[in-house]
Image (cartoon, rainbow, N blue to C red):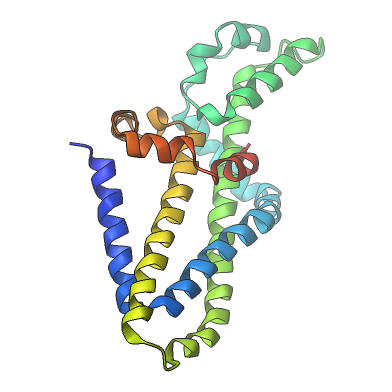
Length: 229
């Protein structure tokens, strides 16, 4: 049983039904607001991330949690490069190239080559978590502001239109919203790597042609990856 596919199908059906009851105009507003919120968040999240990373209390708190949960051997940069597979499986696959480049930089610099590479890795993981936190906080704030703005346009849903056509097109808009949300979820999963995120999800994606196609052709992945890296 492909649990991930079943959940996605149920979510699309429920969102389609939501579109039926809401109607086309209101669902278009919801869909457009979701896209606008996502785009604005990508642009504004770096500002929030910068504020959070400059806050010593936030940074130190997260770094402590990372240090307590990410147990890495105390090795220098050269050793870390030689045994990268040993530590690489403890972090999201989307960070692998960044960490390799950083460790190579440490190894090439004779003044830092003997430094503890595990500290560098913990710092990178900490910054990734801060970026995710910055994205979530920004998304919440932008959602609130855009939600207030789009309340003004809800009056459009009361215009005298053909009721059935309005609701039928609402199904289309609701399903489109569902695919958009699935795209955002899969973009995050692709950065972390399905196996790291959840073994069950990885198995579901590999065993389903539909999920595999959506995962491989997700146009949102490059945008999410460019932000999180």
